Image (cartoon, rainbow, N blue to C red; front, side, top):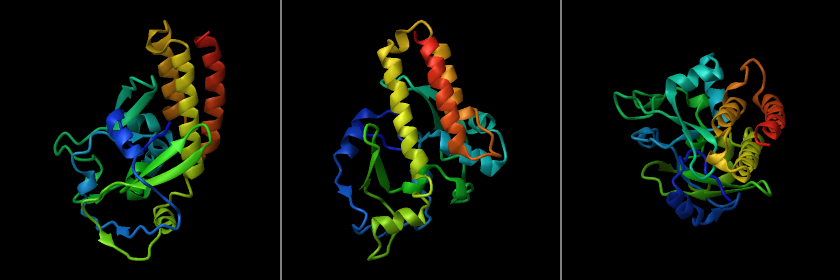
Length: 230
């Protein structure tokens, strides 16, 4: 199973992207963002991770739930049965709500899918192996000699990769528990999904680091699922 950050449940698209050739760390990746903002326009499928929401909340100095209420819509994946937050486009422009005058207003705290563009990321939740592939960009400049490693470092990906991998692993683990218990047909499915959503997205204080809180939330959540899904 592979997961691509920022995609809202398009199985056919993810299958096509999964077939793209993978890049090695020393492979050339000459793409350089030209700041045109095209990747921020008319995008309606960008899913946030808990870390994405936390980083935005910390940047805005607001609670995660407040940021989610202002900028996201909630969905439950049909195949995963997991709750997810999708960035809601601006009702005025249809573009990313953080696109301001052609520039990203939250660039230092931008979601993983935005930081990776035009890369896709595949994570094997059973081995925690991470792979990267290129999606055809319609924009950008070129910097010959630049490698995938260079690109990831410039985008700040290594600093957050441990938490991103753990997020994918734990979400898959939770999804498997839900599906094994009957998924949406379980009599306590709705309250269970609500508690999962809290643990994944909302029960964080931005005064403290994300990852220790995530680990605590997941430990408590699995103890709760033992009771709710019994």
